[in-house]
Length: 416
Image (cartoon, rainbow, N blue to C red; front, side):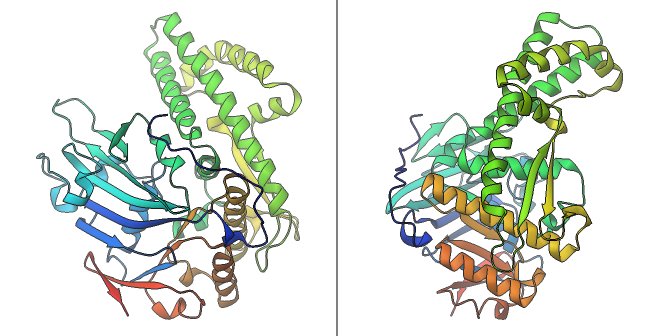
């Protein structure tokens, strides 16, 4: 891939200190017409960044912007068209990005984000935005550039920046539907394999196409078979990637990490069961035959009944033996943090770099002991952490050499 720089992956370095190698951080962030920010430019160092201000001031929007500099749909999973600066959301005209973003994204855009990312002293300009289209019925398209060069897919971003995040909405991840847990696992996989994002998108696109053809009732069988073939290859591949990620995480999460409990993880689903028993090539044959046999049933139901879109993540609290959904909300949050910390360590082991951590309102939703432990662990990791909160005092005993910014009415000012 032309727009992807080769990254060193030498695991022979001394691992006595997680911060000893693979420093990755966002040095500069620029926004144009994104959420509540018409224009924003902020420069930071590689240490922790704390954004404080009242609710609704725009703190989380900054974390969300960073989350769009990695593959995927960001930490809120919002529609791209909903991200445009509020005062422009009802208008049809285009705009030119601010000068700093213009060097990365040079087309008229609805919104744009760019960042200067540093990895081991090497700086890279990465950017993304929503392209304005001239055709009435043509959908707006997300574009990606690396050092000024167009990239065909979002996957390119993952070779230059990786990020993990924790938000208040994720507190319900074990209590709500399986879709959120699948997206969570997929984000963890993307941290190791950016191409996983393309496989998920390809599978979901073909599945929607299959559902539409079956719903119409009359269709080209060759075209339907072609869609199913892509579902088979991408579906089995992404299922195997999820299972591989869980296997690696289990080697880490089975041990307690300070005050964060040990956890046992597993992926459940029909394809997962098949992959436990037979090679992937045989699973592809079984899945292909199942899709063919289920056409009539799926036609009546309006959905595809079998595939990785039906899989789920199961999490067990090892000490109590309870499933995560049965644990208290405090224990659920602790289990979630344990998994995220394990994923960060795994990225360090396999890619020799720590991901950027995006922690939204983390101080207010943890008791003091767990909050202090989390800050201590992040400090030992050497990861750049962007954190938000309404109360600065929650972060002042962290021991970090922290940069503080006040956020008020979508304006950012550095605090002393």
